Length: 314
Image 1 (cartoon, rainbow, N blue to C red):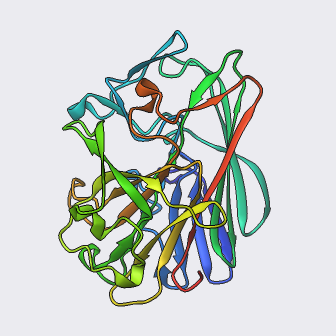
Image 2: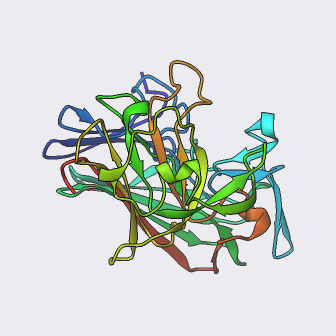
């Protein structure tokens, strides 16, 4: 029987094993030896909580599912009906075909997003997952096949596993200086510095070794003002228990936002089972506000990378 997420692409490199699915090019599982790096889902399950999904051509939420860009209107289905939002783009439930699979440690998948009411543009998307000594590298390329400029944003809904402890016991350090203020529909209404707020416990310049466990802190928050390392990337770290080693999520500078989510709104038994650190190129509702939108000209491409370094490999 075919799994709900379609064909399973198993990648391996030494003790590391990752599984990427046909449906959504989703990172279903990632382990290093017997230690789960990501909180994933079983082969026989439908993805829940957006675990490991690719979020494009917009990440996060779109108010009322409608927008206008350069005189062209889009109308997307409200797949977050309780808040009257369209959420997480259009490709996360689409089947992605294999473009290249020449080694055990990498796979490249592709999908064409054809014009539709929600997105009246044609985009060819390719994504490569590659394992190496330094962990998992994910590279996305979006090419416009439209005859007019296309708005674009991307995000990735990676959850880090707290194993062998609980979410309450992890320590999190995201190099962000600013938090977006969100309304009751989880849409931006302003910003505030994280310094001097409860969010300084997980954001800001303090190193992971000085952080306290997050305890009962509930996160469903978008952080920005990312502080880049010398190589032009930012790095968020999650440490379990009293360990001095941390799992790292890194991203190119174009990922100016990180949505952090502790899963408190997920239904049991999924509540607070993982910590999502989601690199995003733009904030929620960017198709309406234009904030940090990528614009892809006809025939041109946009490419970016992010990745995960398991604890002990950084």
